[in-house]
Amino acid sequence: MNKKSFYITTPIYYVNDTPHIGHAYTTVAADVLARYHKALGEDVFFLTGVDEYGQKVAEAAAKRNVTPQAHVDNMVGAFLNLCKSMNICNDDFVRTTDPRHHEGVKKALTLLKEKGEIYEGTYDGWYCIPDERFFTEKDVIDGKCPDCHREVAPLSEKNYFFKMGQYQDSLKQFILDTQDFIEPPSRRNEILGFLDKPLGDLCISRPKSRLAWGIPLPFDADYVTYVWFDALINYISMRGYGTEHFSGWPADMHLVGKDILTTHAVYWSTMLMALDMPLPKKIFAHGWWTVDGEKMSKSRGNVVDPSAVIETVGVDAFRYFLLREVPFGNDGNFSQDALLQRYNSDLANDLGNLVSRVVHLIVQKSDGIIPKPTSLGRHPEESDLLETIRSVHDPIKVALNGLEFHLALAEIWKLIDRVNRYVEEMAPWNMAKDPSKKEKLDTFLFTAAEAIRIIGVYISPFMPQTAEKIGWQLGLEEIGSHKWGDSLIGKTVQKGDALFPRIDRKVVSMPLPRPTEAVITAPPLGLTIEDFGKVDLRVGIIKEAERIPKSTKLLKLQVDTGERVRQVVAGIAEKYAPEALIGKKIIVVCNLVPVKLRGVLSEGMLLAAGAEQAFGLATFLEEIPAGTKIK
Image: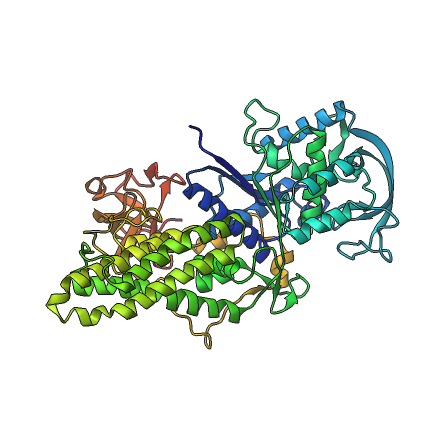
């Protein structure tokens, strides 16, 4: 039996910008859905990426005196880092400079030209350089772009056009017949209103004499493809369109911001109709974020940098806030006070404190071993808790299927609140004083632990790191399913750091808005000698090595780096047996901020070949003293 598939996309983000809260919002929402559908056992494909062509990219590269390709190669790192820092589980990352994408674009253009869907004509009108769009006289407002409100310039030139207008009636009827094609309903109505006006044809080219940075038209080498036409094709090009390996279409879900809904619901849909391809099953347009009640903009300097938020509250807290604070589809307001209120109340108090209390009770009252329950369901408090666990499952499922993330989280917190109340009702600190209540105490400890495990399952799409930490504290390799079970019996709990240490709102300093200069100025190409010189690389000699319990990848090493012996946690257990490492001379980064991995302090990082897995350590053949600096 074939598994059900689920294909979800974000828009591809314009590489000339730098990531902000809006990019994080769309990507995290898609990530939650991807993780949820994977947990259902579906064959998930999650695509995100960047759009690298267009006039603004070419102009930015010229200002830096570098090629456009060098410019985008430099800028794309910020978006790759966003995926990494936000713990995004995307299956592919599109760059529109990728040959795979070029193949799909050229195939689509060739087919449309052969079908007579593209024709040559002359454009006379107005052009907005920032938006890279043409406008007619009736569209322009007081000599300015109707979208970005900046000055437009008159332009007359020969170009190629896609016969978009002839699909107006067909598209409108499709939207009327397919109620859930565009959501939420307010956005659907906007597109229907847009289609009530005459829909013109779409200019899909730019002459190379004016803009050389783009994908060349396969039927006219003097022109490149309009950036919005080429970008939309990524949704099929990255599934192999134009090759024998094309599969996976139509997409189940396009997530977009409301500002680019028209390009997806109208441009993309008519392009697909012309290609005789099915339309995506759903396009969902979410709202915008304001900052302290003001519109987020570069000129105001109030663009929220996701990395600054993560540094302060952690990635899972940021993910939680984005999807709990406002209904998905509505506009939302970001403020430091609102973020910290959610953090301290929902995460530190409700969830973090609950996990800490229960684990501590198991350590204190049961020698750290989760006992077997002997009287489960005999007490009304337990029966009510079990009913709450059963009652939240369907509402969570319905909410996630409807992209009502805030309602799904509200249901999860209903369960968290009930477990907290259960702890207070059962008062295990009193039971421990009476030997006759040993069975009742054992049943409580198991029930509370199992309820927390199920909470971990439900929060895992939203806060995957937190779910993993909960599983680790309960002695599990995997968090398991939402169904009540007995897998915890006999497990040894592990006290870890607080999941969400409280943050003092009076003293916290959170550099949320990114300075305007950081938004509009591209970073330098590559590292300088001065940058590299800041990394303290030294020869280290491994003195001791051992495996970390409950981990198949991590080893704990004691490494002599000259000035002292450092403890280093390294993901090399699948490559090396601990005893084989004793005496090896390795390269250690000595000035990293210490971190805890699986609850074990790591005071450095060793260098190895390989990204996802270690293929070999960087080492030396010669006898070199520990602590020797590397330059």
